[in-house]
Every structure is written in C-alpha cells, then in structure tokens.
Amino acid sequence: MRAIQFERFGPPEVLELVEVPEPHATAKQIRVAVKAVGVNPADWKFRQGMMGGELPQGTGLEVAGVVDEVGDEITDVTAGDAVFGSARGGAADFAVLEHYAPIPASLDFAAAAALTVAVETATRTLDAIGVREGQTVLVNGAAGVVGIATVQLALERGARVIGTASAVNHDYLRSYGAEPTTYGEGLVERVRALAPGGVDRAIDDAGGGALPALVKLAGGPEHVITIADYEGAQSTGVTMTGGPASQRAWYALGDVGELIAAGRFSVPVAQTFPLEQVAEAHRLSQTGHVRGKLVLLVN
Image (cartoon, rainbow, N blue to C red; front, side):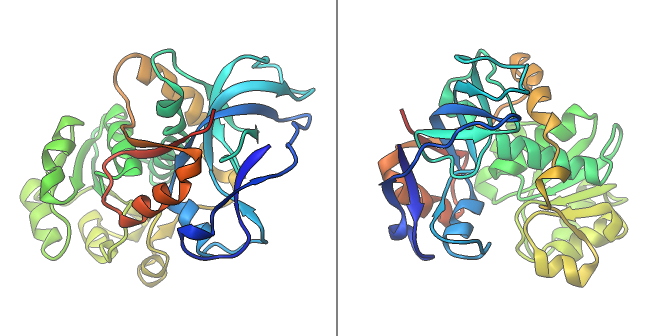
C-alpha cells in the first residue's frame, strides 16, 4: 500500500510516498480504507525529531475512512461503516484504529478527519480542570483548531468563555460564542476588564509565555492546564497534558456526534491537499497562521 514516511528527521522535504506492507486489525482493532487524514502540529514535531521515536516513521494521527477489517472482539461496527478516529501513520491507504466513532451523517470524510485530535484534546483539558456550569473560562489560543473546539465544548458545559486571539480573529471567536481579547503583554488587565474578579479556569492551547498571566487570573496553577508550554508548566506548577493514550478522553469521539447533528459543534476545514502534497500541508501548518484544519485526501 502507499504511505507517507520519513527516514530521517528534518524539513517537510524528508516526507516521501513509499510502498509498505498493509497493516491488519488485531482482535481489538478495526482497519479502515483511509479517505482523509487531519494534519496536526504534532505531525511536524514528530517529523522534526522533537518527539523522538525510531525511524522510519509514518505520519498522520487522525483519519476518516471506511471499515474493511473488523477484529474478533469488535461488535460496534461492521465492514462498510464510515468512521473517524485516532491512528498512527494514518497518511496511508489503510490504517488500524482502536479509538473511533461513526461519522455524523452531515459530514464528509474531510470534515470528519478534522475531529479526533481537537475533540479529544479539548475534552481532556476541560475534564482535567473540572470546567462546569457557571464558571468563567479563559482559553489562550482560542482561534486555533483545538482552541475553537475547546470554546464550543466549554460553552456546552454552561461556562462563559473568554478567548485570546489576534485582532483579525475576534469576529471569528464571537461567531462561536466566545468573548475575544488579544494575547500578549497586558493580558491580565484586558481579561479583568471583561471579568473583574478574574476567571475560574484557564486553558493554554497556544503557549507563547502566557502561563504566569493565566495563573494570576485563575487564582493558582491548579486551575490552569496547558497543551503547549512544557517549560512554562515546569516553572509555574501548571499541569501539562498530553500523556499516554490510556489517559485520553476517547469517549468524547462518540459524544460529539449528537452536538454536530444539532448544529452546536463544528471544526472548520481550511484547506485540503492530495496525499502527494503532504509536504506543502506540513509547511503551511508550521506557519501557525491557519484558521481551521488542514486535511489530506487519500482515496
């Protein structure tokens, strides 16, 4: 089968379309014929060697496709079902999945491929700091894909959401129900102008040195979580999340379908690329200036 791999760490040019043996589902897995693959910052971090691992490596952490093999212990899907879920090396003709959910009827494969990482990450962070009804939540980096998912899911929990973004994205945040402000110096004062008593919880989806301000606004590091600032987490005592697969909020993949069907949740797709243009997709992702998901189309 075709797959995108790299034999050395480096720039997007190390990505190659190669022929590799097909994977097969074990007892607790399904295999899908991949139709679309989401592109995430973690993909190019793996490619650059920032996440370690043996070589060669594949790329692609989330896919949408059609089930074509079902493990002996799987009872919730059958061959021919359309699903989305978490993969390793998903930028290929076939991928095996352990965590997946049916694709909502209103979505095509590209839109479904955009869901997994954003939905799971947003839910995991909201769970970890106990976001609930009546709280005010600050989301740093709210206009990114994970950020906009976090905004919507926090609102679903009954929270008030303040989100940081560049000024050009403020109307975008408002369209999703967040109250926007800009990031950077003076953040504490700007947020307190909106919420004079500070906020109950804060989620850092962007890094950029915001953690000290978030801790101050939320009343302590125990009320703050980051997915993006390892060094800042160490110096402030904030929790850094991104741990083992066993600790992830996979249940959210099944839950989000109802919200999508009701028109209360979406992850926008910014641009699609054929599989062969994976290097260009990685290059664009690395700019950090994409509003919405980049998706590779496979078959």
